[in-house]
Amino acid sequence: MQQEVDQYISQFKEGYFSPLAMLARMTEELGELAREVNHFYGEKPKKTTEKERTVEEELGDMLFVLTCFANSLDIDMEEAFSLVMQKFNERDKDRWTKKEEKDDEANE
Figure 1 (cartoon, rainbow, N blue to C red):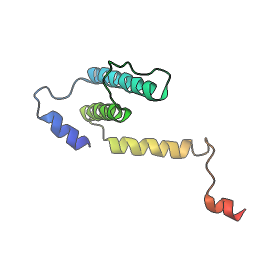
Figure 2: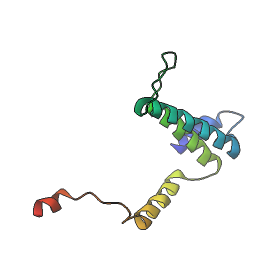
Figure 3: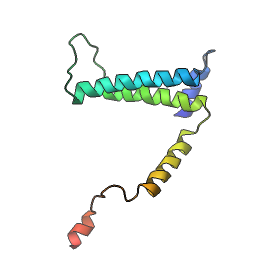
Figure 4: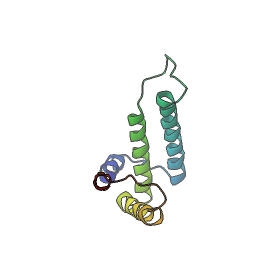
């Protein structure tokens, strides 16, 4: 995914935006995602004049901008994800109530 985004951005002279501009873009996209979630799952229905968008499309926009942000800072998203999963698996392993395994329930 990062390579594909980099190939796309690399074809333009402007290249990646600055980190601050990228953060502003991410914030903008997050607002659009929040608006869509509110329309689908919240109490605020869309106006009849509003364009039909989807949560999936807005998540895709967020993912694209997040990928651009990571690329511009030379961050490997797969490595960053591995680090955060290691943190959750170690630090938070007993934080939440785990679902019971079906085999465990059958043996009781």
